Each structure stands twice: as structure tokens, then as C-alpha cells.
Length: 152
Image 1 (cartoon, rainbow, N blue to C red):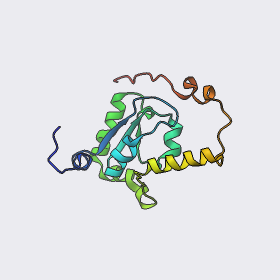
Image 2 (image 1 turned 45 degrees about the vertical axis):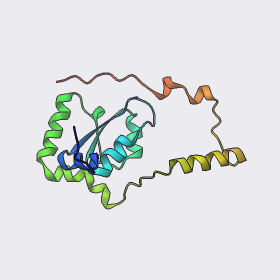
Image 3 (image 1 turned 120 degrees about the horizontal axis):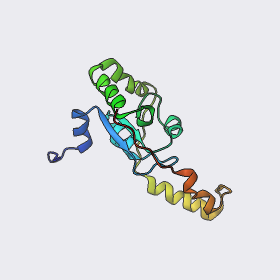
Image 4 (image 1 turned 90 degrees about the vertical axis):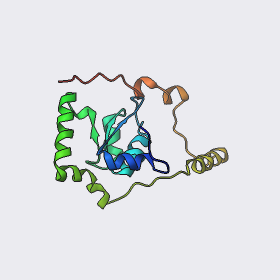
């Protein structure tokens, strides 16, 4: 898709689409990326999420602000619900009620925070988890294989 010059692609998408597929490339614990926050939520699209553990989304995102693929038994059931939301403005708008109580804060200052953390780490003023690298990087407990949803 070509976007007009000087047009923010996600702004353009948000004018034309209600939903954003926020599918992660890994199915791992605490792996929620900008696909949800920046690409979808900051541009007033409902993220349809897939990738992290269900409780990660529940503990991180505002309630009723996203649609989790894992909540549906089939692709058909999911698409039926999306069609319903598309036709029902009240139900669709409910996914943005969280904006009355808070807002997303976007920061491009990750590098500064990382440098600050490294300085504290070098100074010995940071308490680190008591895990060794093998325990910390135990992908069998952090990541999982995902079965495919049936079509019907």
C-alpha cells in the first residue's frame, strides 16, 4: 500500500480501519510490543492480539481495550464478533472507554533509560534477580507452541 507523501501511515490506517492485527512473531511470556501500544492503541484502532500469554495481556493492557485471539474457539467465531463490532457503534466505542481514566505514554527515550540502568548496574545500586542466565533464559517455560485455530 502506498501512502501519500507526508502522511503518517498509522494515521492513514486508523481513518480507514477499526482493527489492527497485533500479532507477535513469538509466543513468549511478557512479549508485548509496539504493535499493540503504538501501532494500534495510540491510533484508535482495536488491537487484535496474539503472541503473549493471556495473563500478560490482562495484567498489562486496560480492561476491554483489545481482542485476544485466544478467547475464540475458531476463526469464524472471531470474525463474527468483528463483524458485530463493525456494525454496532456502541459496542465498538466501549473498547475505548479506558481513555476516560488514563492514557498511553509513548517514550522515545528508551536509550536514556537503558544508559541510566547500566550506570546504576555498574555502581552496584540495582538489585538483580537471583536467577542465573540459564534460569532467566529458560525458553521452555517462557515460550510456547501455539495450535492453529480451526476455521469453523
